[in-house]
Length: 428
Ligand code: AMX
Image (cartoon, rainbow, N blue to C red):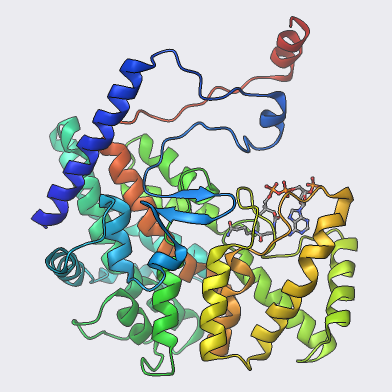
């Protein structure tokens, strides 16, 4: 993987030089102020991390090195990982090198299957996914090299090495979990020539030529790959890796954050929400019926899953990309139809809900993604966050490789007590 190593090396040097120069020119610069409101609102909007793999513009959504969603939605997950970690799309030979590295590293160790099979069938698939990754921690090359006395300048290389080993195994691991929990438990082998999305589709046990399911999986693995540095899962993974805990620890930890209903689990919640609508109102509810259902959900003190975002202030372009896919491949799907009706009513309701308190009334990616998987027969919606997770690990790996290359220190913000705050605020 010389080509990939050379490119990442160049990127890290460039980013490091830029930061050094900026710091030399502006040693005392202030980036922003921390208000009491920031402390009370989960540090929302506080600029306190550097992340160059991707950026979320509130009004245009996800950017990866200058490319926005419509520019990269037709790429493959392999191309996207290369883009995240190097800052450029791969040439043909660079892509071939990366793809062949991933194919070589894709075998999940037997002990992982043994451990996963021993778990109760009532376990959530995200727990299994996180445990499966954590169980492979002993495979970390970074860890072995570190114990042998690795030079700091080399940290990123072995973080990248671990990342490739991990990413290569994700389709097999994730699909195996699906087979163990929801099918007969047989682990399906894959054609060595397949890419990550093809591999995933085959190993899940779905017909790869079933009118676009593989294409959907490819899109799924691309659209969820990264969402800058401050979201719960990416941030968690970076905090853990900043202690030099290897990428297996960091990815597993990040996925535990992704498993929360306000974050990645929202795609499961959305399908559950739509299924409940259909159970209550039938498969073709009217817009008025949906409006009433949404109002009742809010009156019951629940959130509308798939709506709102901490950064975005428009319809998530990832939602739009999935909608384009749905309109092309399954416009008649009752699930997609209900997603559309929700889109017609929810934003207007949320705009005035709680006196206009909702910062973003528009849908995020989770409002639609599950309805497409459901259409293709993946009806166990507890599994959807695992699909999100396979993709998001690409971002964790890229972010942590770059962070190690830049010698970013252990992350350790300072917390304060109520008494400290009282004293500080009263002395102003
Ligand atoms: N339904 C009902 N109420 C909502 C809401 C929604 N979809 N989105 C926000 N609100 C409420 C909040 O709960 C909060 O109420 P409170 O002050 O009484 O606690 C108020 O509006 C203000 O919150 P906010 O500034 O708009 O949002 P936030 O930045 O604090 O949180 C998010 C963002 C995503 C957690 C929130 O919009 C939400 O809970 N959405 C539903 C779950 C969801 O779709 N999550 C997935 C997000 C994308 C992802 O990570 N995969």
